[in-house]
Amino acid sequence: MWKYILNRLLISIPILLCVTFLVFVLLNVVPGDPVALMMKEKVSADVVARVRAQMHLDDPWIIRYFRFLWGLLHGDLGTSYKLQRSVTDLILQAFPRTMVLAFSAALVSWIIGIPAGILSAIRQYSVTDYFFMGFSLVGVSMPVFWSALLFQYVFALKLGWLPVAGFYGWRYVIMPAIVLGWSSAGLIARLTRSSLLDVMRNDYIRTARSKGARELAVITGHALKNALLPVVTIMAIQVASLLSGAVITESVFGIPGVGRVAVDAIKSRDMPLLQGSVLFATILVILGNLVADILYSLLDPRIRLEK
Image 1: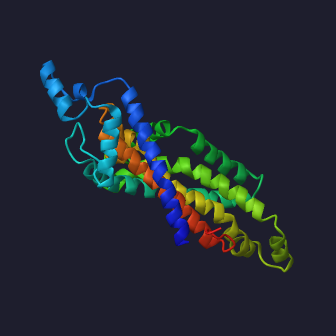
Image 2: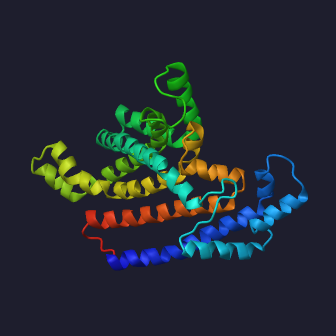
Image 3: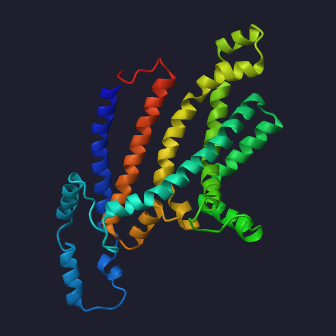
């Protein structure tokens, strides 16, 4: 297993380089001057030229890219153009808030998605099945920003149960976690349903039933363990995706996480900060896929990662 993990980590290095390179090229193509965005008041051309020289923005983009890679090898993601602070410090400062939101949303998606998928599979083509699958379909289909605005209007403005936005305690996490988790719960529910239905058609399930085992014991003791294998894989990847991709939710609910950091970096063309945010998100996705593969091999002894 350790050999497999090492190989996966080595393969991820060119992936990270490609991601940083694409982000760097795209930011150089997009029109706009980060120095002009930094200056709130009109200044002379000499001041702008001096600031650009200090920030090495007049150097060819390929030189600036290799300068970024050299700093990356030494654990330095650079300094934010706008905030004049270490990119690493800014990301690490924002990451705990994103982590709380992501794990809360993942917990919501699991609590909703897995029971909904199991009940839909047990009562296939019934009213319960149609209800849960319709509910999950709405969660998958509805854009996150729209469901976020809808929840804010109903539960914050009209009912006053929860705060509209911010991040000042556990009550501020409930609504964004439900919004973000609902969209993921739909995928978990549909995958759990299809996987459980597929497993329940196998011969060993019919054998267990023919021996007189109760239906609940057949499902929980025989079918569910094998049916949840692909679900667990998606769950591990889902956590990494939530950690790296909660941009819209953090923006709508005013949560100062990594997503908000990336959005602010895009608005101000803060290249070091955006590169660091994208690199951080890519690492999380790669690690999530690696954890999913390891969990899959642990749950199913027939799978050997070395092969």
